Image 1 (cartoon, one colour):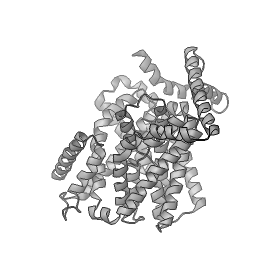
Image 2 (cartoon, helix red, strand yellow):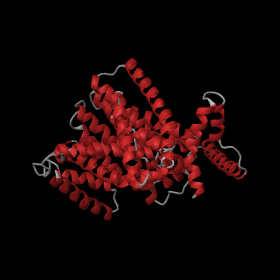
Image 3 (cartoon, rainbow, N blue to C red):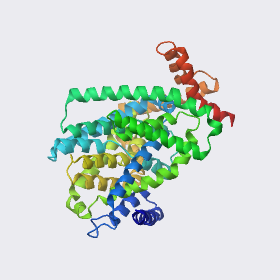
Length: 454
C-alpha cells in the first residue's frame, strides 16, 4: 500500500509540476499521471493494488464535495438569487436537453443519453475561478453572478447524482417514482438544514474556546462522515451527505478556519481521485473515439456559450456580462468525472463513454483561457451588426444595471434594510415562530459579528 501511494504521489507531483510550468491546470496533470501509472499504457499497471486507489479516490470525492459545501453561502445566494437561479436553470435544462438529443441522434442507449446529459450540464468551478483569475477579470462585475450560478450548479449536480443513481439501479425511468424521490430528497434536505443550522453553529460557538486546530478538524471530519452515513441510511448518495454538512458548517463562525484546515487534505485526496480517473483511460480508445470526442467538445463549447449567455441575460445581466459568463463556462470538470465514474461503477453506461467524457474535459479545459479572450471581440462584432431595436435593448439593460448598482450603493450608505433582511422580517411574521427564528438568525449572523470584532 505504501509503495502504491508513493508511486502515485511522486508521478502526480512531477507531472503536475510540469503542467504548472506550462501554465496549465494541474487537474490535467493528475489525469495524465493516472494514464502513466494505469494498466493500459504499458500493458500492466505500475500500481500493485488498484482497489486501494479506488478507495482513496472515493474518499477524495467526499472531501472535495465537503469543501465545495464549505464555500456555499446562503446569504450570498440570496443576494444574487435571480441571476443564480435563472442562469443555472437555463444552463442545466438547456445543456441536458442538448446532450440527451445528441446521444439520441448518435444512437446511444437511453441510459447512456441520460448520463451524457448529466455530464455535460456542469461547468468546473475550480477551472472557471482559475481562468478568471489568470485573465485578470476577478474584480469585474460579471464574476459575482458567474460564481453564484456555479454554486447553484454544484447543488443541482449533487441532486442529479442522487436521481441518476436511483434511475440506474432500477435501470428504468419512471416519472411518478422520480417525482416521489425528488419529494423525499427535498424533505430530507429541509430537515437536515434546519436541524443542522439550529444546532451545530450553537454547539461550536459554545465550545469555541476549547477548539484548537487539531480538535476542530477532527470534529469537522466526524460530522462530515456522520452525515455521509445518514445520507446512505436514508437511501441517498454519500456525496450528498458530505456536501450538506459542508453547507451547514459554512454558516458557523469557524467556517473559514475549517476550510483553511481542510484545504491540504482535500488537495491530497482530490489528486488521488483525478489520478484514479486517469487510470481508467485507455489511450487507444481515444484514437478509436476521436470523432465522438470532437463532437462532445463542440456540444460543450457551443452549448455553454449559448445557454450561459441566454440564462444570464434572462437573469437581468447586461449582454457583455452575460457573454463573459457564458464564454468562461466552456468546459466540464469535477462533477462530470464523478457522474461518469458513477455510471461505470454501476455498470449502466457503455465502456466508451467514460474516456470520451474525460478527453473532452481535458480538451475544453485547455481551450477555456483562449475562448475567454474571444469574448469582447465577439461582443463588439455582435453589437455592431444587430438591428437597431436589439441594440437599444442592450443599451437599456446596461443603464438599468448601472442604476441598480447606484441605488444599492446608496442604500448601503444610508443603512437601509437589505433585501435579505426584508425577507427574514417577512418570514419572521409569517411562517416561523419568533423563538426559533431568533436562534436561527443568531447562528447565521454570528460569523459576521466575529469578523467585525477582529
